[in-house]
Amino acid sequence: MSYFRTVTIIFAFILFATSISEADDVTDQIDEALKAYNKQDYSTAATALDAAATLIRQARADSLSKLLPKPLPGWKTKKQSNTAASLFGGGVNAQKTYINGKQRIKIALTSDSPMLQAIAMMFANPQIAGANAKLVVVDGRKVIYNKKKNSFQVMVANRVLVSVEGDRNTDESAVKEYLKAIDFDGVEKFAK
Image (tube, rainbow, N blue to C red; front, side):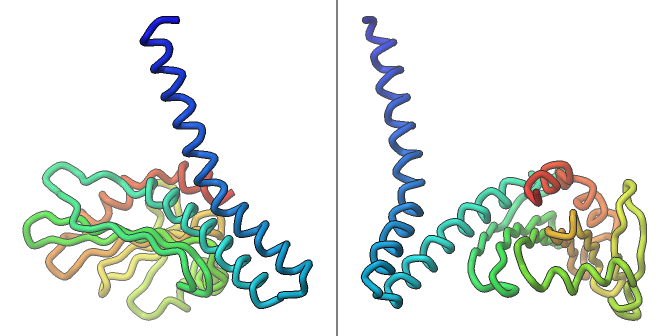
């Protein structure tokens, strides 16, 4: 067997083992919960299941963060954060800030939250969103635009809220360009 082939096989095995060990964190917690449940140790069972659910939400938040767009020409990113906790009642969130001189734009993607059902009502009746909000259509999508907040919000498949917000120094056109830069097909696939 050639040296290159041996190294390739070893590398493939390491990648496979790494993916198994990452998945095992969740299954280990589920197994621990099952063992504790069978012993009627309900507190430990609940704690282990909560840990497994948190690990799953963290994986979803990491997947969601990959859908945030790259900086547009002339822009750079400042920070990115992913949360998978009790935000909005247990949802996941990924957000990134983009900077160009004094202009700042924050994009946030929120999913798996019970609060999204209430937010979805805004898209059915934009008057609920307040006096400064209005329904507009951008690239065929219903969008709530809030002039005062310099923000656009889109609900995707009633499961993912996309928010693009510029600060007071940011041109509305730049905020709209970032809205158009979002991979909505990817967000729709994530929502399923």
